Length: 457
Image (tube, rainbow, N blue to C red; front, side, top):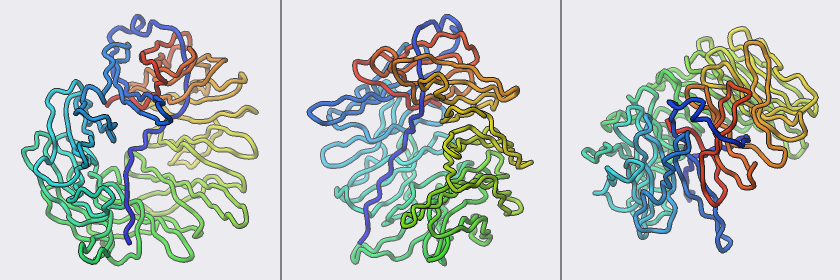
């Protein structure tokens, strides 16, 4: 019996603070947009609304209401076009979901795949912003595991079927260069409701291709594109071990990158130049109450992996490439939480915050010059900035009576958007991350708690 698979775009939330005003006065030409959500509780039910607002606090738009189709159901997800001009989203209409794309003010409103029966779900934009992958459940049975996958032009001028009768296990994804689509799942016999085969399929956007590259494998998990679109990594295993592999687009070159104990799970990220993969392995033996993480660097060209950090009580989180040379992460070792970075080329490990206090949630700026994090050095969790060049730090926010969370860098590395309850209810703030004397500006104005999701592309 197949199980229903559901995708959620996990909109992660981290930590921040603020009060005051005058960001626009400091830099009046700076206008970007921030997406945030609000949380409202009515009759023991929680309603989420999604908003977008300019970084100067102007033009706050409730996306759920501006794109409303006359239903009380929340949109499932908003997916931003790569250049941030449009949003794609799902809306429940009657007994089925429909897929749409429009401007944020509701203009240029187009239903995607409007000729298809059943329910349509938006899955992913193409890198060019010209097309979208949608999934179609041919029946109105939303519990069905049988999907058809299409590519549709955003003006609905062309609709191409990619694969049919598939139980999707990983959300179909475009290759970074936009030339291929990866589908991971099992082909289903509609009459017997059993798998015909299962694997990883690589399609061209016109629907050609589609050879099963993993037909000889018992199972494959989490296939992920390399940045150069030439390879994909995947996890597999047997009764004794878990493995991390890399394969080319013909499936002819399959390289084992790592193998670990059967109780171990992988988490990994490619460097932007595709030369390295940073891997965290999490070992969990619940019978023996043993839990620890290890950090490895994999050289893609040689296929060799190097153990960087291990320990019986080590826990690793928040891995992020700072540039093509460095990886930052948070490690909890011997009862203390610090921020580290490792040089991928030299494999040198550095503890950036050597203190008796806890530091957590490191997020490097896009330009690689600063790291935002939270620490309890003053007794309350506040946002701090670490300058990588000289390892100096300064306190960015002050909120002794509340909490800061959800901090996100702007694309130019100048500003942080974050959520703070400094005024008694969570609202969205923006602050100049390079100026320790900058006053945060509250940019959201809602009657219910508001939480940052991210800057709009």
